[in-house]
Length: 360
Image (cartoon, rainbow, N blue to C red; front, side, top):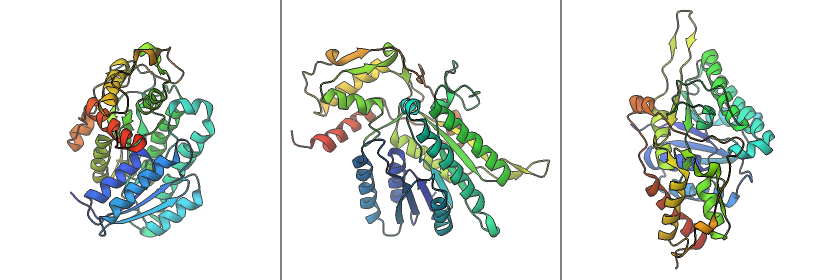
């Protein structure tokens, strides 16, 4: 199913956002995409510029499509209103957010600005997109996070589980996004779908993520810290699987309907997107080191044992993440399937090309 629609993607220079834009330009004929990103310095801006360069190159291959980029912050209400008024998006994918559990402990202001105020501005703009009888936004898709499950003991995590015990401000803001979207769906009949992403990784990812940070430290000869003494498990999800899930969900907006009270039944859904195969952190590190050696990022005689440090759990972390993706599979016929080894191999190859070069 192809669609010729106007898609607004916030966080378009980010890891998931850029991969989504690339996919839309490649696979959706005559699509018009407008991306917005603040290009902040939370991590190396050169990575964000690199991703935008990939998008520009892809857009040049598809003259039937349209690509525009706006550098700006979704916390700027006037800018968001202007974009909606001029671009009139059919589909909005809100991926702009201040990410990271640990950073939220020391820099909470950034999370309130982007994740709460910014998302509120997007919701308000969606609401007013129907003013004057316009068709307005047909589907709002937004990023939530597996962190909303907090310290839930039941696994795998299901979207039917109660998630009222966040263990970080980041998680609290993501749960707040789900609540805000539900209220706006109910009040203004905005079709919205929240996606709880599980530990996304891949080439040109975020340097604050474990696989990327570990690689950087190993290159510098520094020790990597493995939390909870390695007794953590993570449901690592390759970025291509995340994007496939997002695109399928974009095509399937919740249906509007009216309840017995004559008011809208909220056209609102939540899905997990994860690999449904949690990996032990020590196994993850072992696979990562094998693939880094295989790609020539690290020498074959690298002493990994001398560069590992097992440390206690840190504030905001949870011992396991594990996605129940049965609802996604039921409604969209999709289940992520990229193996951790395959995904880390592609990351290691990209890392060598980007940071080291292709020459031996």
